[in-house]
Amino acid sequence: MQRVIDLGILFIAIRSDEPGNQFMATMGEYLCNPLAEDLFDVRVSIDGFFSDELGVVESEPNSKGPFDLPAGKAHRFCLSTQDEYDEMVVSWSVRYRKASGESVTLYFGSFKRLADTRHFAEVPILGGPALVVPRSLADHA
Image 1 (cartoon, rainbow, N blue to C red):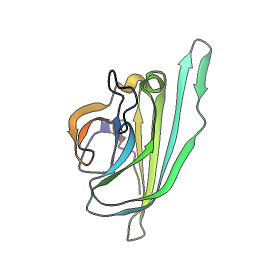
Image 2: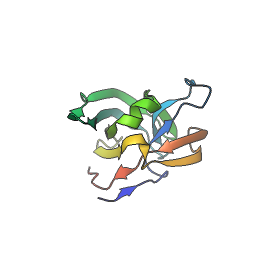
Image 3: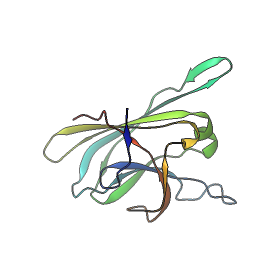
């Protein structure tokens, strides 16, 4: 399934630890809303797994929210280390409600070592560098 990175729609960005400054105040996973509308009752579900010589180990699903996400803003919903990403395949589902009452669900995911993310030197809304996670085209409303 083809995966998309588009900074003009809702996206997940990861501000990672910087060399020599392992825990910066800005690091973490952010849900970014570049849309011209506020989003309500936002929930982010995080899931993942890793494999080793003993087989596959799945993480316990973890849910963040609910929170509201104003137009043009970002919300940090999680804080993970690069070591965690080096070992895990991670997926996120984002569910929110529009002002019209319509519910939307989007899906994102990344391979081990964040291999399929894309680095941007300047991420809109965050005002700095970050990795942006690809979105699945299997999204539905």
